[in-house]
Image (cartoon, rainbow, N blue to C red; front, side, top):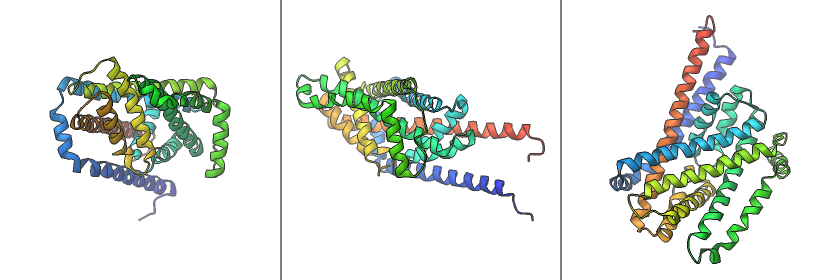
Length: 321
C-alpha cells in the first residue's frame, strides 16, 4: 500500500484535530447543562411558545450582528472574504468558546482563515480587536443604561459613565496600533501590521453596540411571561445583559462564561426589575439554553456549507476521488 502524500496527511490530521476540538467543546457545554436539567425544564414551563420563539430569533439576530462586527474589521484589514466563507469561519470558530479560556475562538479563526489566504497572525489580530471592540461597546451600553434606570442609580454608579470616553479613546486607530505592537512583543507574532481606518472601527463598534441592544431585547422576550416589562425594565435589561456578558468573559476559566454570566444577570434582574429570585434564575437559564441552540445551529449550518463547498470543489477537479 502506498503512503498518502504529505498534503493529504496534513489535511486529514487537521480534520481530526478540528473534529476533536468540536467534540470537546460540545462535551464541556453539555457537562455544564446536564446537571441543570431540572432548572432548564422548569424554565421551559414558565415560557410561552410565541415569546420563546421570538427570543430565539432575537438571539440569532444578535449573534449574526456580532459576525458583522468581526467581518467589518476583517474587511478593514484588507481581507474581503466572501460572505458564505466568512460565515463558516466565524460561526464554526464560535464553538471554541465552550472550551475553558477565552482564546479558543480566535485560535479556530486563525486555523480556518488560512484556507482563505488570511495569515494566522492577521486572524489573531482581528479576533483580538473584535473582542476589544465588543467589550468596549458592552461597557458603553451598560454605562449609559444601568445608571439611569433607578432614581439613586446615578449616585451609586456615576463612575461607570466615565468609562465611556476612556473606551472611545482606546478605540482610536493610533491607540489600537500601539496595543497590537505591544501584543506582538508578548506573542512574538507580527500583529501590528494592520492599518485599520476609523471607518472600519466605527462600523465594527456600531455593529457591536447594536448586537448588545438586540441581546437585551432577547432577554426582555424571555422575561416577558414572568414579569412586567416597560421602557425602564427594557433599558435595565439591555445594560444588565451587557454587564453580565463582560463578567462572564472575564471568568475565562469557565466555558463561554458559564455560571458567571448567569449569576450577574440574575442579581441585576432581581434587584432592578424587580423579579423573584427563582424567576430571575429561570430567565438566565433559558437565555443560556436558547443562545447555545443558536450557536449549535449556526455551527451546524457552517459545517454543512463547508461540506457542500468541498463537494463542489471535488466535482470541478478532474480525477478527484
